[in-house]
Length: 391
Image (cartoon, rainbow, N blue to C red):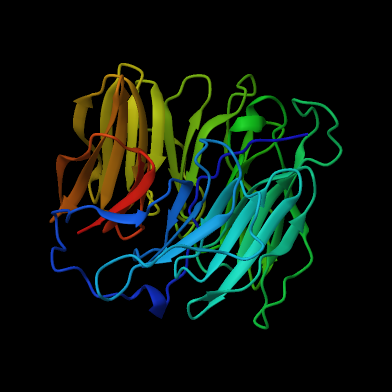
């Protein structure tokens, strides 16, 4: 049984390899596009400081392929792409923040793991085996991995809850045995929507259980603590259309599949009552790692940017989009592609001195935009190539 669960979180760690010189044009203005790869790909992931890129080398929008990688060199250009040994038939990939570790999904087989020493990638090894594992997420330091195991469900859609499982990497590089942290909501919604989220620092898991209770658990001294409730959601709903957690595990953003309105809760000596952030329904949404920036396209076709300040949430950048849209956001930048007949326009917003500037048109033919966590590198697929800009 194939369970298609989209990944929300781009996992990452800090490291010297990403500490490339800041481009001379850094600031609120994007530099000229550079060729990252002469051949197309998908599932593009960038390290936190934009020094490393990985992607699935497949021209198909969904097809598996090898994992390719490139470095941003001090001279100011991207290196020739290389293929990670043993990383074949991969459908999606995650990159650690320092660009030194990757987690790769092979549908029907499980997940592969590879690490880099200097400029050399080691051969990919099996980390999680199983025909019914899905949705794996990795912490930014590549120390914690969580996933859903649907074993026991012989039908599609699944009719029994899935097991939310986790492993932790020890100081010597070995991994702990898998443990079950909780159970997640079964049903049709779990096939294509993420039923859980792992904070970027690996300290917190949030998931929707089989009773539609949104729950969380904390990792203390490498041990997952008993779960607590964040909010009881509508049991008649078919799941979540969006779920994201702040990088340190203290804020949660979610959107029910039924009403598509965005809700929020923060942890202050316990989870606070849910706050509804939008009244209108949303068709596409992305949450930044710090959960203070949320971008979405409402069902009326308007691009919206929600930004949390010391005084509360503010809305800006309301712009009408015609055609299908895809959005992405990090702490200091946001981007979207607007697909219309014959073209797919890429535009971006950047945060400068507390103000959102934009939109800036970057390409007339773009898809699959990906932002580095620091907001200074943006990559996308354009025709038969992958392009990237820096600021």
